[in-house]
Length: 253
Image (cartoon, rainbow, N blue to C red):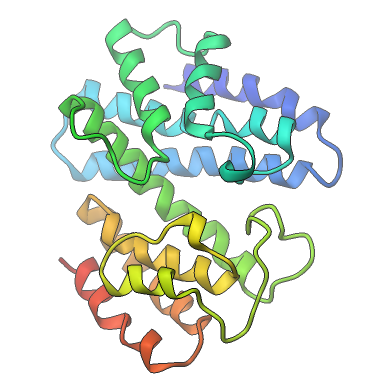
């Protein structure tokens, strides 16, 4: 595992070195995120009864899950897939192009590549192997928990310079998009494409409570206080308040 971390560091280092002063924090953000997602994945694996090989595979996928973000940002200057490319698909292609996982057995490497390619899908395909589904679900949960951690500070006292992490969305006090609010009411994930302001992004993050696969992830979202922090940044309305109890019940399930 340490060898694969070093390979990842060697891959991302040129992106960091060639970045200008404006770009460097965004690149560093994704490097730090990759290792924090790995730590989350290790915690999830430790909470489950997995074979050593499957746990290792999931943790490798976690480190490499956002490999596509680096060429994406270099080419397009954004992390917004809808304005650039699918970073999951690009990540799998990039790992293959640069032979980053060539030391792994073929089956394990293919599972990692599948998890990278699928981790950012709105839903996983029905017909994939149990190993690939488990690995991808671990990466998805690990990713979500860390993304919320990253974004909450950016959403607090929004300032110029937060445009890339916040996907260019602006603070529009009191506003929410009905379709995003309705998704949370119905206990399903909001859609990135429907967002038009930062309150929508806060609602989308809350909606992830309904797409976490493992008890560790649900308990972590509660333990870190993400629900109350995000709720307190949303408009003070009955519709918003009504979301709180169902989300808490879901996370305690």
